[in-house]
Amino acid sequence: MKRSCAPTALLAGLLLFSACAPSLAPLYRDYDVVPLDTSRAASLADPAEGPETLSGAPSDERAPPAMARPRIVAALHEAGWDTTSTSLPHAVATRERVLQRWGLYRIVAYLEVAPLGRDHVRVYAHPFRKYVFGKASKIPYLTRPIRSRFLPELDEAFAKHGLQPVGTPFERDDTALR
Image (cartoon, rainbow, N blue to C red):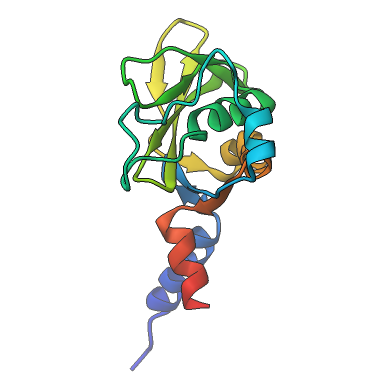
């Protein structure tokens, strides 16, 4: 009886195809808010903003630290993102920024930073393809080339202002298993 090469060829094809698959990541990253010493926190605070909490709620055990919002705004500006107003009172939003230019479209994104409890914030990325014909389409995930266009600067600026990068749940689970 003659053996077929089809199962071996199929397995080899699947392995080759999986090696070419893009590395995908969710559209958000998490950061822990670490307390700063009072002299550094006072220098980072914007006098126009005042010492308000990120959520605008009264200070209690569930509210974010008082200087979180000015630190987030300063870190976003340092990473090259211009902030803008948003309909969410507790979030900080940015203007669109071009990440990549291709022939028929460019990839643009804007960020939203929202609190998740007292010592945790989440940065949501909203990437789009904007075609030269005027149409736009949402990108449902962050590929490695898109992430490399803004995340290193964002992580560095946030760490400098006391917001330690924690990553995504997939990255946290991966490091916990190693």
